[in-house]
Image (cartoon, rainbow, N blue to C red; front, side, top):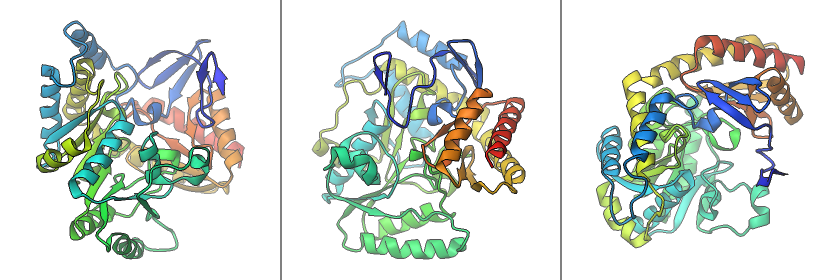
Length: 407
């Protein structure tokens, strides 16, 4: 779809021009106001156009906008220290990137160079970026047929989602067998996973508690690396500052983007150990012309400061539980609803029919609630984590009444 010289994908069809955005609200060019339940897909976790973050951008823009990749701006050094000090011990070295795709590409290259192994294990029907390499991680055939072949050397396994027909222990037991089979040849450089929930492509499938610990145990057993993609789960979205903290697991490599700058700048980060970076990065020849612009580092530094100062993750955990419980209660008799699931404020409402999901998103928008669906059956709810309860309740009411209309 092409609108005003811009290309929009089948998924992200053009809807309206945004004339203003603030807090939990968006306004279109006609002045209509919407409650936002998307955060730009886990980007504006602190609300749209946060004034402190905007001010940090303005201040830094008056000092320096760019430095060559073979130098460093003081703001880059400052943020690298602040970020790594917020992570588990050992994750102390940063590779600069411009976003999630580049950060995940850097992680893949570093893992192969460090381990001197080829195979990357990924979960089917997941999303980790737009490059040939990152698209190959999740292996979604229907989306890749026109551009195939993609990068080789990837092994794909099923995500161990919670299942009403099995208890969580059985799901994890079955998954352990899958992991052993995938890793037993000791040819796997790394496994790429999110922190217990699929945020990409909109399924919001949730793994049982113990998923991350099992991944960590098995990757160590077979001398493979664990790459944790925290592009969607990081920065308080899942009820902890970072998703890895839910099970207190430390990966070998972790990637960040989206909420890292709250939408004020394009930036990503690949964080690993000094040992892995020293061996893997030079061999992989990792560089980034626009990675970590000083202005981007200024806003990411302020963003992280706000998350830690205000303990935003605590509100996200509380409000996420409130949303899930409210929707489960209000929709329990609606036969069109399959399941309401999520972690923190990363929540999915799965419907029986794709057409229903499309209709709900369109009708809710007419009522002033901005939603996204993956054009499948799942509506993914990702409100700004700072949203007041009054706006949250109004949005929930619109969503429930709209779903019930199409029951």
